[in-house]
Length: 357
Image 1 (tube, helix red, strand yellow):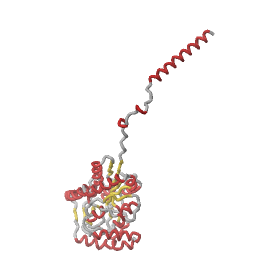
Image 2 (image 1 turned 90 degrees about the vertical axis):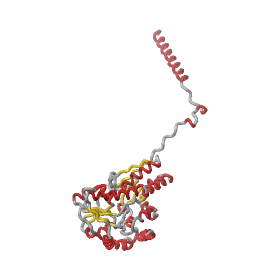
Image 3 (image 1 turned 180 degrees about the vertical axis):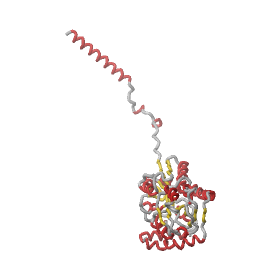
Image 4 (image 1 turned 60 degrees about the vertical axis):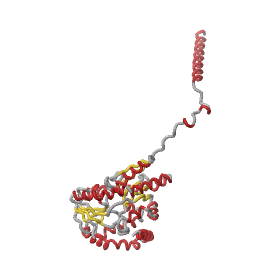
C-alpha cells in the first residue's frame, strides 16, 4: 500500500515538473505582433517578378534563308526593347512540316511561323488570290502594299486563327534545278516541287510541270535521288540548303512572292493592347529595316557563291517574261469565273494593286 502511494506521488511530481516547463516555454515565446508593430509597407517583401511571355516561332528554311533570318532579327529587336518577352526561333523544320506548323499556330501551340501563304490554302481559300500570277505591280511595290495592311487580307487570315504580322522582303522567285533550264519551255515535263494551293497547281499545269508536294527538309535528298528535278522558291533557301546539289537557276519574274510571318491570333488577342501593339510594331520595324537590309545585301553575296560553285544562272529577260505572260495571264483573267466565291475579294485586291501601278 505504501509502495502504491509512493508511486502516485512520484507521478504527480513529474506531472508538475512538465507543466512548469511548458508554462516557462510559453512565456518565453514572442507574442504575436500587434497591428502597431507590423512592418511598414515600405519594408514589406517585394512582389515576385512577372513571368516572361515566350514567343516560339518556326520556319522550314535553315539559317541563311532570308525569311528564317527574320526570326532572329525579331528576337534581337524584342530583346533590345523589352525584358517582358522571350523569342525562341526554331529553323529548319524543328517544329515539323510547314503544314504542321501552320496548324500549331492556329491552336496557339506555336506562336508564329514563317512560310509561304500557299501552305494555308487548305484552311483559307482566300490565299489563292495571293498566288495569282501577275497580281502584284512590277518591282517591289508589293512589299509596301502588303505591309501597309489590307483589312480584307487580315480578316481572312484571322477567320482561321492566324494573324498576318508582316511580309518579308524577298527577290524574284527562281527555279533551281539539277537539269538545264534556260527557258520557260525547258520546265515542261519536269517533276517540280512547290506549293499545293489550287492556283499554284494551275501554274504548274500551264507550264507543263509535274507538281510534287513535299516538306522543305526533304528537298536535298529528293533532288539528289532524282525524285524531283526542280524547285520553285527564293534562291536564299537554295543557298541555305542546296549548294552542291543544284546546277542551274532561272529567274521567274512577277510570280507570287507571298512568304508571310503569321502569328497565332489567339496568342495576340491574349495580350494587353499595349503588348500587342509592341509586338506588331516591332515586327513591322524588323521587316522594313534589319531583315530587308539583310535580304538586299545577301542577294549579291549569294550570287557570288553560286558562281563559285559553278551554278549556271539565267536571268530575267524579255523572252522569259513574254513566254510566262502568254502561259499564265489566262489564270488571272479567268480567276473570277473559276472561283466565284472569291470574285469580290479578288476585284478588291486587284483594285488596290492597280492603284499602286
